[in-house]
Length: 286
Image (cartoon, rainbow, N blue to C red; front, side):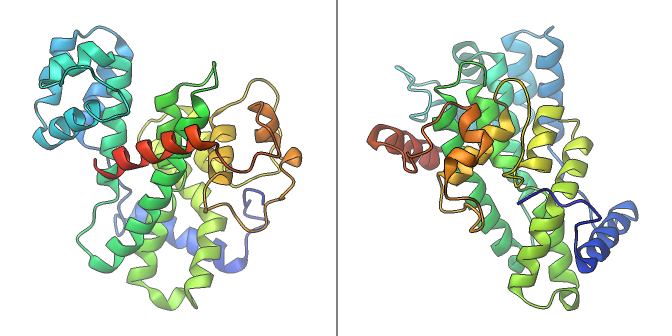
């Protein structure tokens, strides 16, 4: 399954993609946004000129984000020996880089928030898929020396974010879509282009923009070390969300080879499955 170019898209998908671009340009549909506090923290950590106390002060501006960060810091994922009960302790224990990634992860969930109950149902399904994939990514990333575990989780959480504007358009203008299957096919074809637009709007790094653009191209080849597209593709293959038309011979899938995984091992062993369940439970509770 390759990333759809405009030439390979169906006419219907091209039409809907252009409608969405126009709707975004005219503010009829707004791209998902991240909370200002999350953006400030990301900028501050990337500049490298802020102390743990400075980051804690920024975090304290958003009580909901702060509370959920402490909850995640005390989850089994980070196995704190003693309870972490304040922001500065969380930042000191985990480090500013991990805290930055966790804050962005927590903020991503807010991008799935909507007051429309019908859209919310669809968003919830997408978020559940994202959590499943992110959990598998975390398990796989622990054995990869050159890939960051938190970035792998973040890659899993955002891989299908381009579907959100499509779902919103489908709810507003259902006549554009013939049936649920039609909507699923269109999402598959154009969510990569929309995901690129969203992550560019958020000023995300190219390594993650590549994820939303290329995760569904299982024929993808690239030179160099394994990257986050590889980890997301392998993560998807280890969940119930793998596309039905992906080659069942995993030795033919470059991501599996790039990560040094056994192509015959289609399921996690007991230890890895326990790690996945633990991660999923922690992410579900944020």
